[in-house]
Length: 292
Ligand SMILES: C[S@@+](CC[C@H](N)C(=O)[O-])C[C@H]1O[C@@H](n2cnc3c(N)ncnc32)[C@H](O)[C@@H]1O
Image 1 (cartoon, rainbow, N blue to C red):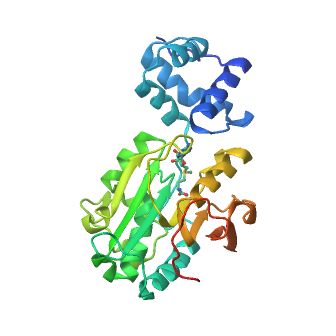
Image 2 (cartoon, rainbow, N blue to C red):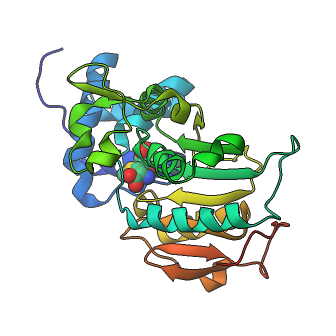
Image 3 (cartoon, rainbow, N blue to C red):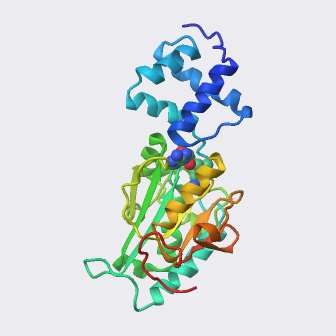
């Protein structure tokens, strides 16, 4: 196939927007037309498909699960960085300090004190690794806890990258010397999250629009700069589902440009984009943590 541009008609664009919305809840605005053309054209060429109409037909009728996943991966936006919106990590450190100080802290079946955090829409992993670095740096005693971080994303490519824990040295830009010193430096161009932090992680592909095979309860959920791609009803549904997996008084952290009607969803706004999960509207049986 030559490099002739493949044209995208208005109705084809609408169909593609509909398919990604149906699969991943992502609402692509009119302005995303160029992005759609540039990202999907590569896929069409690889499949030897010469028109978007044929590609849509292929997606609807013939594409395997893996081929549909390629479509989803192409249309996600994965921008992230270490210590992004760092006031959330300061807040988390303070909150976990109170959990640690509480003698009635929840215990796991193995008798260890339990701490669970979920990074939902973790992209290439900088967010969950920052959670691990921030907490383990401040509270080394968490080594003896049953402390786990679940990190999920709909995009299987970013999950694979996240699980490796290896990044380019340029990703240290903007970090303090203390924050940067945590990383291993296997080569001049690469940095790696050390094994004791990687071992806290479980990375899994998970589409927030589908079932969540997750038990919880969590002490904190980070879902930052993810629901920005969803419409309001979808956002509301996701925030409601999170509340059912959070312990009472646990926290949901969302992105700087996201918001919700907190009270009606069982939360209280406690700081900039920081929501505490209230007890009285519990849909399930959350367990009480500590009041902060
Ligand atoms: C801009 S990144 C945000 C990464 C990180 N949370 C942060 O704030 O730096 C948004 C992520 O949301 C993921 N995402 C979009 N729709 C999703 C869905 N339906 N289920 C799970 N993840 C989704 C994308 O794949 C992408 O990696």
